[in-house]
Amino acid sequence: EAPERLASKLRDLARYQGTTLRDVVMQDDVAFKKKEIDLMKKARSDYEQTAQNLVALLEGEPAIRAELDKAQAALAATRAPIEKAIDKSMNDDLSGATEVVREEVRPAQLAHVAALDKVIEAIKEASRLRNESAEAAYRQSVALILGLSAAALALGVTIAWGIQRSIARPLALAVEVA
Image (tube, rainbow, N blue to C red; front, side):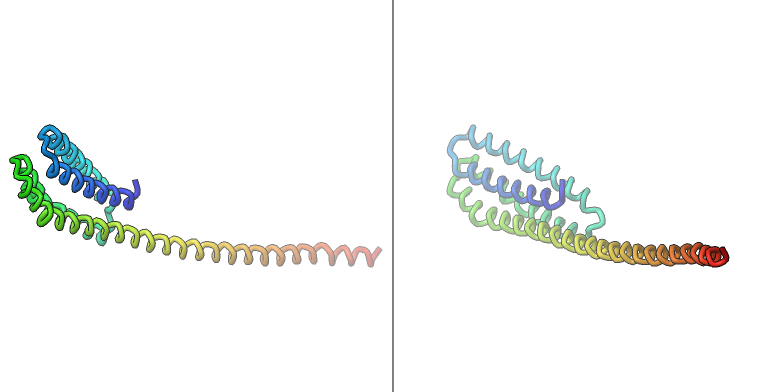
């Protein structure tokens, strides 16, 4: 997959984890909470796999990799508050869990999503630079082809003129003699 698509998927998975956490906190049903926690774990696993795939694609892209490292650090900052909110929710401390989500988790998640937005921006900028480089190489190649074509045409005309003269002069001389 393309790096931009993978980074967008990371952002979507981060947002999804935030949504499932809020579902855990807002529900009273323990079975529903456990199901949502399982969905969070799956989303986290998908996130980690997608991040590994993105890292593999970013070989030789230190600027993008630096932004991704910042996003990973922002993700790490969300883990402890998320666990704290889940623990409070599972212990029926709804108001405490809600406060943790509002005061600790949400700001950390927003920072994480903002860091992922910067990753996407860095990928777009790198793509733009590669595109500009490819366009410059294309223009240079077209100019080279046109120059070589013009040179080949001039050489062909010169050779044709030389051949024409080497045939026409002796024929003219033969016609004069005859």
